[in-house]
Amino acid sequence: MLSYRAYGLNISSEIAFPELPEADGPRDAVIRRGPVSDWSGDAVISYGQRFRAAGARAWIRDESIPFVASIENGGRIDVSAPEGVPAGEDVRLYLLGSCAGMLLYQRGLVVLHGNTIETPGGAALFCGHIGAGKSTLTMALLRRGYRLIADDVCGVSFQRTPAMAVPGFPRLKLWRQTLDMFGEPADSLPPIRTGTEKFHYPVANFCPEARPLRFVYVLNPAGSQVALDEVAGARRLAVLTEHLYKVRFRDAARNWPGLAQKVMRLADEVRVVTVSRPPQGNSVDELASRVEHDFKGLGAASPGS
Image (cartoon, rainbow, N blue to C red; front, side):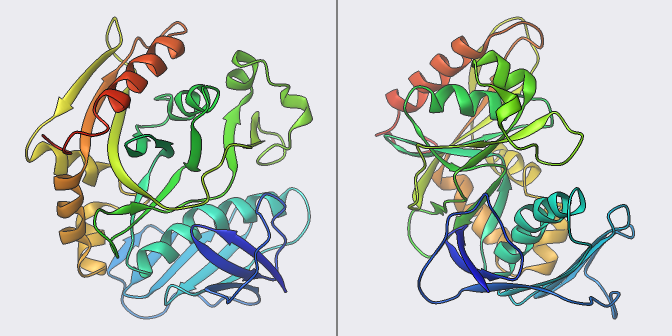
């Protein structure tokens, strides 16, 4: 069995993950191949025929691959799926995305959807809907010397105060257009799946340690210019709940006891800022400069002040 490091966990796996660093030490979680039964019993969360969850169990299915996975007790993922390309690429995406996210929820973390970097004042998370520019902004700041903490899946641990963003693994998923913008040759990179124009970009400047989550920037491709506006008071909670990973807040709060209280605590600890930018044109340099000025200038300030 192979051993990897991701999301702050040592993961033993019967499936190879070339994008993950190898790991030593005691095992925290395991991924095994084998038959996975259909969901049985009641579900607290049910999204169509693709997802079920109840307590420390979750179940994910994608018939187009076909792929079925069972995630249990924050420590085990069983997966039934074909091997080889392109199915293997799709399987790894599910395991390192949706399945890992459910595993982190089961371990008591709050999981947010976005990219996270290390800043002088703590971790900064970039959220936003598809096409908002999260990965492009992340790449621009990595080029300025900042370190990546996590791509797409931001697990937040509450074992310490303040809450900590746990490291994912040293990879960023980028579209060809974004790679072209930064002068990176896409054709030399592996696609995230066969036939797509999105690629695995290996990140050299990676932060392998957890960092206090201090800033949340919500990107919105709207407006005529780049503008940053701090979110105050109770609206911070509304913003954070909108960007939970893969599940609606009300469903997550019912299924994982304590999650609502953790999100409320996080809303008190972090600075939340909405970031508007023009939907057309290349404003990435200005966007990166404005965001960098914000977290560098306020890194020592009290979150939410």
